[in-house]
Image (tube, rainbow, N blue to C red):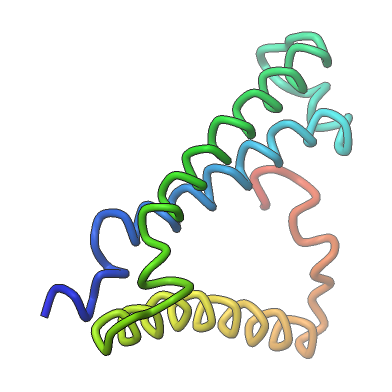
Length: 127
């Protein structure tokens, strides 16, 4: 049964983690540039160049981590060669599709309730 749920194994779940880590590094790097008011309220302040430079290095390294995980699991993600790989491919992309559909559903539901999604996260943490 393990081949049919390879997407739920160590490398499969590490891909989700590496995507999150890469996007987190990008957002940390861009926060100081895009949201200056939040950066100015930080308890520990470093120069803008230091924050952006460390964020760029972290983004490159986490991108390499993501590349390595995807390279090791190309068979069941992009080119399934067997029924087990095909089942795992559907599971992998299915988890992503479920997450995207849940996000779209809740965004639509909040919009119909009158909640402005653009201003939802203006303060960190949201209140």
